[in-house]
Length: 170
Length: 100
Image 1 (cartoon, each protein chain N blue to C red):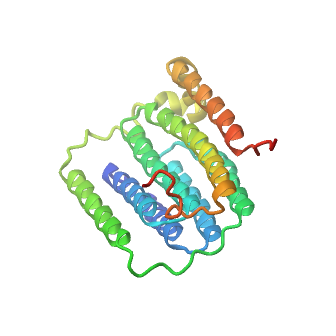
Image 2 (tube, helix red, strand yellow):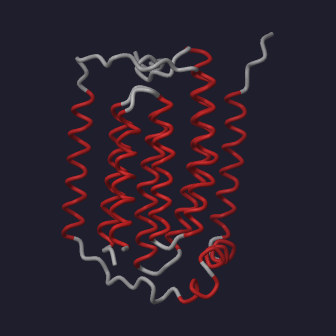
Image 3 (cartoon, each protein chain N blue to C red):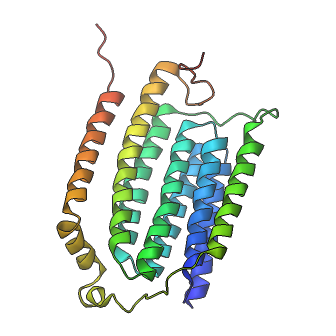
């Protein structure tokens, strides 16, 4: 059962990801990216990371994609013109990508992974649920990175406002 | 039970698709979306290790990656809007102020 769901979600995620980078229309790319986020969230559920799946849908599909679609609306991009046939960057990029993928496959096929202990040591999670366990860890052991992340978000917010603000003409 | 290498391979494939998108596309918004794809590939890897080693740290890291992705998207889109305002294009081939 797990196998069927994994292969289904994985194939759909990869298919949507391929569609994102091959569609000519930006809006189609954005819609396929949303569907990729949903399939990745499904993969998270298979991995018993329910909180992260919810965050994936809320933050990625809900917030980031709305921001991207609004920007597409604002700047009105015409459909990309037919690509110049004399373009050397594309084959090189695909070659390098396939090469890197082959390298990763080679490493994965030779790697020795530690024995999977999934489901045995997560008693705590089974008792109080994934959200509570992650929350406890986030506010105790990882409190400092959490605060740094909030400062980063504040800086990003100020930066975005400053850069996107219309300059006052004098 | 699905072995961890399946999840790692899926993460790697999505990461590579994102990097090919960054290298081949000319539209700055699609480049930004490809970067989001790459971050998602990394997140799958983190969560897969978190599950198979029964350690929640991977999920915490994935949450931080999502936070950084949100900040990156906000700043990146602000840069694209500012760029569009002064150059009237989002084609990265036409944006060559630093090229001489």
